[in-house]
Image 1 (cartoon, rainbow, N blue to C red):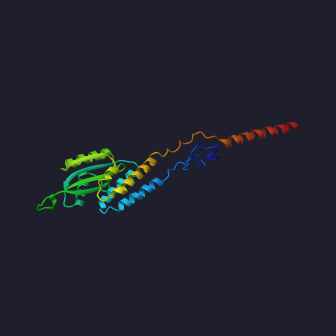
Image 2 (cartoon, rainbow, N blue to C red):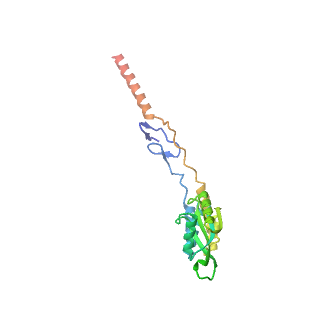
Image 3 (cartoon, rainbow, N blue to C red):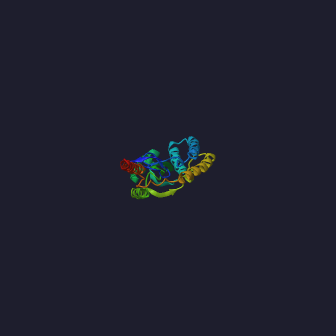
Length: 231
């Protein structure tokens, strides 16, 4: 109430707006409570603390964060040979033409042959991405690139449930995960039911000041004319 836009004074602002120009969205009553999210994050941290492997912990964190906001994750997998786990992941990103700073890569030994070269070790490599990191088209192209580079068993899942994937990670405490699953679902529901911001105010605002000034001017002229007539 009583804001000014240019030379206009607003008689009132639309619901959800305030400030001098009636164009500032009010956050009062619209900001979602963070209690449920904070509770889920606390349980997430307790769950992550029990995972010793750094790569598995990174993967679990990505999955847990996705669960808290109610989003699916994307996963691309395949088999290749490499001297060690880190190199397996490096090869994988390179062959897929993907940025190695994205996602969480985990390589596990599936076959270790007794040969002259360490390159005889075969790894099952999987990379988990959040839905915000890469789009489906990019991952489809990555899968094609992997196959062209000779990577076997390439598979792609762009609608993977993060909690289901968490259940496959070694070191994740089942009891803590069960609690987290309930809390993450509550936080996700809250995040996805937050009402949208109110519509912007109409372009034509009521020019109360201008109208009031005009009325006052007319009244003054009439008064002066009446006085001149009487005199």
